[in-house]
Length: 136
Image (cartoon, rainbow, N blue to C red; front, side, top):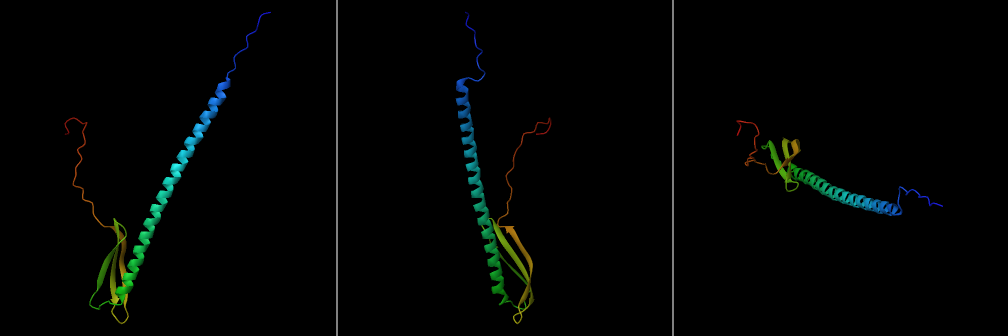
């Protein structure tokens, strides 16, 4: 009696183990990516929280300075102003106009803005290659 050949199965016994290893590896990669993303989001939120805290502290200092200055307004002065640093790059600029003098001090804020502390002056040039004929 001749022995019949059985067809070989499409999925061999080792392929299921290989699939499990691949899935575990993929899950580990996604876990690491999720962790790195969460860590970066956390660091960014801390940075933004500190920037907002510095901003509002500068606003509070500006309000306190206006309160202190309002008691010493001179009738001869018409306008005034000051700048409060927020951080290394920004500052709060406040300009005011005096409406009344010492007896009944009042003022109007004419400027309340955030501006850069230093201006950028571009002095460097960048020589780019030109691919058009006749243009250096």
